[in-house]
Image 1 (cartoon, rainbow, N blue to C red):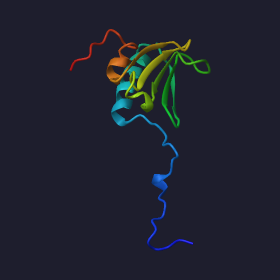
Image 2 (image 1 turned 180 degrees about the vertical axis):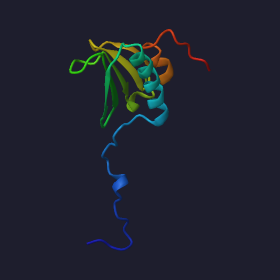
Image 3 (image 1 turned 180 degrees about the horizontal axis):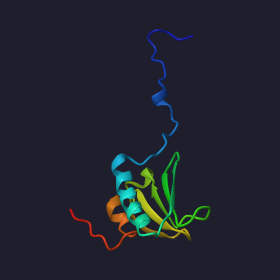
Length: 115
């Protein structure tokens, strides 16, 4: 029984974590690097996964093999070492940080970031 004076629980207040995604600006930065590498013939395919605690952009050289690189966004690490990370095929973190553009430089080092 619910009394009119009691507030009903709203779906937004439930403790279920939201799915983490890349926003438009983040995807633009990632796809700019990806497009340059595809045009150069280095990369051929990608996959995106949006999970409860992280968003993942996987980069492949050929179809049906392990990804060459993984770009991750993990918001719970935002106040620590940074929410963005690039990992290689062996699982080694190549770069981690708070600024996605700077983290992506590890994939395309000949480009300079102009502020």
